Length: 106
Image 1: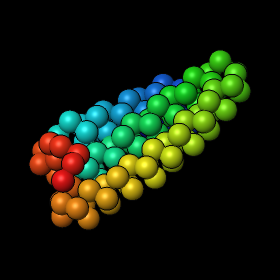
Image 2: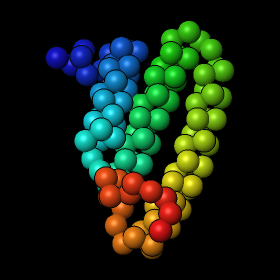
Image 3: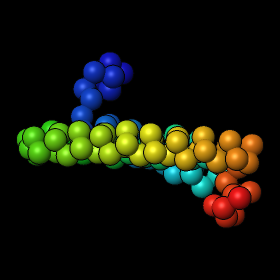
């Protein structure tokens, strides 16, 4: 039993990344709140970063690490712009339900 807990290989990280990605995809497909959808997209990007890092370590290539840092920077910019849009929509409409937002004009 202790060998399972202490001998963590690349497959464990890839399975964990797949589970995180599926949770994020489920949040995007099922939920209708824009904030939950943004959090789910961030979870999917973090899962992609985890798989990038795992494959980079598996192949001994450091370029995956730099690509993961670029993805983190893009995800931070996406979160900032997405939250700004959600706040602007909430100020105008008083809800952030995606089903009710059929048009962008008031």
